[in-house]
Length: 262
Image (cartoon, rainbow, N blue to C red; front, side, top):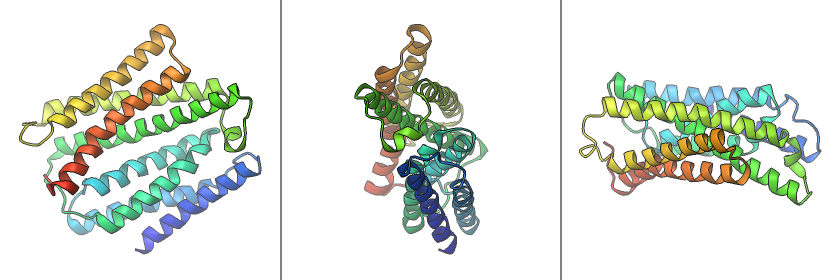
């Protein structure tokens, strides 16, 4: 409990420092970075300690949520430390602490019996979801920034965002990385999952493929037709909704509604 509490407090401190800077219209600085790094390390340590106790990696619903948010928080620290995207932390850090609390209260299920191939598939999937979830947040920020510019009303934390072109470039770079990871996830699934029907994975696979096609179409549209702005935001969010439904939607129904863990 102590490690969880300290991680939560550090996430809150990092978020508070970011909000305070944005409220005073100052640059984010680096004061938030140390507590954010500490929170991420302790968040990861919570999972490692739990896995040591149960004898393996737990990737059930609450654990998966926490791991994805951990990945988002870690990437936010890296991106925010290098540029002006520290504003992501205002959303990502509270999300990470909420999922960490959920994992602490409801997680710690028995580990799934997965060989190294299926573990590779699962870890690649979690990393892909974290990367593309971050892209979805960037898309929302891009939409908010564009709307504020049209109304000539840039206020609050929107001032902390980089210029529109830079934000859009970061969005598509993130989508490209996430698309590669999602492609690897689907490929390892095809190679290593023996029976989709027996493992209740048909709907998950269909939605994942639809999400992959949507992200792919967006990247092609960007390359071929120069898609940007509202069009890019819509395609990104639709693809992310499909991806969330494919993984967490199926896990929620199977594990929490139907009480199936395998």
